[in-house]
View: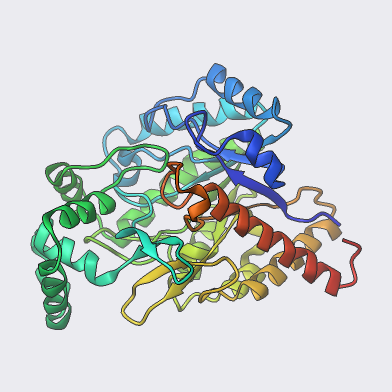
Length: 397
């Protein structure tokens, strides 16, 4: 019986984690994107083929594209929406022509995943990513000074946020601002306050329902095309899975995922099952989501988070934290078995997500959360967990 396909994210030739190292780690698939191409532009076949050849020359496979990013006009329903969707379809056509068929994307407004700290110290001396609810409130209320924020936070949160900010130096305030307003993964872009406010203004009249309808419109326009190409689209959940900075969220709960697959029924319309993003919301039953929506899962991100009572969380070890990883893996093994019994030969691609920064890698610079050793440890633990559970089921591993 096929196991989960072990993959590893790679940000391209500029990544300090090399393809040869990924191969030595034991992954067989690479998850990458053409980050150098601006969001909304068509991915040329020549650029796709060059990247694919680079990966295959190392003995690896380009398993998943993460991500072909969605232009803001598609999210907002702007006047360029249909033109941008046509551009998107052309990129998908070019990917399929190169033999790449699984595409991860997200529909988060303005920002990608958001954290307040990139070097949160752990007991073992390593560093993790952290989302601190009070730090976020301090930025929103007193640095960004978003007018609506005054009515969105209670008195106690405002006081805690003001006290938090009062303890920060100017350099620490700037670091907080830059961390929150970082752009898309794989880039070094950071919004200015004025740029960020301009983006937020666009969403003032776009609430949860309107954003969801804009997502469904996009899906309706591309899914028949994806079916013809054999492309599997898999949406990544919101991170964090709740509204921040006044921006709506539409992929944060099991109901959101259910609404999405029902809105445009298609074998191409699927999910990136991210245990960290969904796990930051304590109301999400992660093993249950796999059991109920497993047939729609085209790609898996496995990471753990430690939730805190005020809505904060940090990236925990892959087998620790608030996510019941053993039960999640059991559910994923059962889903892979179901596919095997139905004659579906494809192994679901899985990658370890967001590793800790260890002193082993102290002299190397990585994109936040994507250190080499931290993710290698995560993949080793997840590989062992899958092997152990399969052994317990009586499989020959």
